[in-house]
Length: 358
Ligand code: PEP
Ligand code: MN
Image: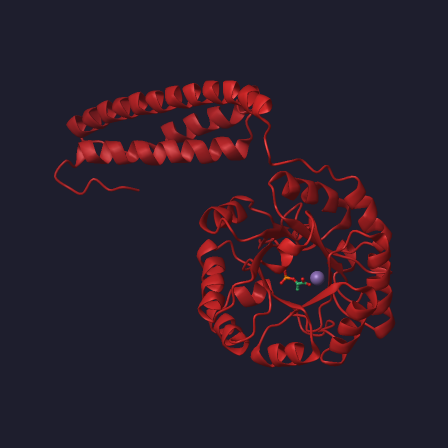
């Protein structure tokens, strides 16, 4: 059984971004224990910071603070390891669980180095998604640990790096952890709203979304004095703040009773019928595209008529509100339809050439 499966859902991993002082580590762990909702205590010992000259972690000395705080509170402990030396020191100190940071998952050499260093131990490992939205890299990290004989693996979704996003520090792109669940249905997935939001005011909303998507738990950064934290101050909350968030989250069941299931099924059937119609219409639409393609071929004109396309897309975007659809969705949908239409027209205009499938 995996470590996270020992805990009641949702599993809460909480603790400071960084271990700063022995007192801060102990105080946070004891307050979290007293709060009664935390399963595992986190503290970063080595901090991968984007820019130099910021606090890069207290280092080795903090390992004993973490392990002692774990013993005193009875909470399992976890810290980030980013190279073989970290692994050796963390294992020697007796940390219960290790996590792989987003800047490590991105690098197969480092993941392999850590997996090799862990070979023969059966310590649970939490694997954060890579900083870039690449499902394959994330899956690859799981495979490297499995090949080294580590089977107690959990995913942590901490969002993906983008340039100057208006809302998030790291965009959640929920479709990626959902795709990971599809590929690895038995791997627990925990959400890290602290690093997704970068901002404590958004923690509740992102945590609720993760629970509604049936994530197994949450990793949240907690500090006794968040505004004066040495790293990630804006996203940390006090132990009391954590409980306020957790107390107001709604836990929905993923089990569906049979009468609710039949109510849902009635609506699902209607949805299925509508989807059938949408696909019939799309297929009819592509036949019309082919007709247009034939006319273009006969008159020797290009497939792409920029002005016409701009007119179509603008009209759809301008009327997205009337259909209660976001502009982003309309843009994606219209781009996909347009690409498919071009493919159909290309096949008609160049029948001897490759049909193309993109
Ligand atoms: C952290 O958990 O403090 C951390 C550095 O996370 P990430 O690897 O997600 O940036
Ligand atoms: Mn942090």
